[in-house]
Image 1 (tube, rainbow, N blue to C red):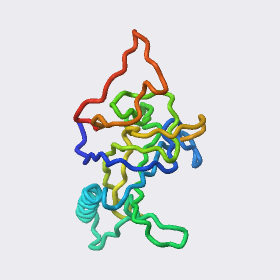
Image 2 (cartoon, rainbow, N blue to C red):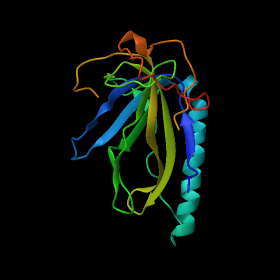
Image 3 (cartoon, one colour):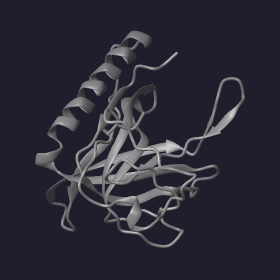
Image 4 (tube, helix red, strand yellow):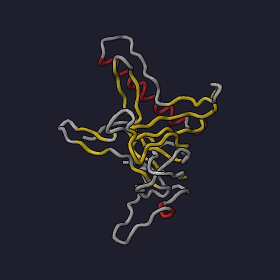
Length: 205
């Protein structure tokens, strides 16, 4: 049965600390794929509004499930970017993440690597997306509640569309992307006649 999580696709932002090709295993195996996306506040008001609505839903659901009348709200999955002196820069940082491996109730596991597309919606393989790349991000908003953390929303990373690629070495690091002017797969890779690229659907990005 398909879930009914709210799905979002961001405007173009700048990648910060991306782990998209390999998982970040700093806190143990199998690790997480993740990326922060920095956007100008005037460009992301609609996305923040959607996230805030899901936060309200998570608080309502938590009150229904808990006998406590007061439910703490967890930290939002986005925050204002601050300069070295602690002043707002006018940018907002959005935090996306997904587990590298998912275990089903049956005990089966599968790799949960986010899809990476170029600006035309063509899937990319073996491309290392570094900080400073310009991306759009596809995500599911997952409401949650724990008595310790409170009620909140996590942004499950589903895929990214690379508009401008900053690429480095191998240690860096459903989807909704429409075609954009920008980086295309042919700039760094070729496909043979037997293996043709699959293009993202129009209602994906």
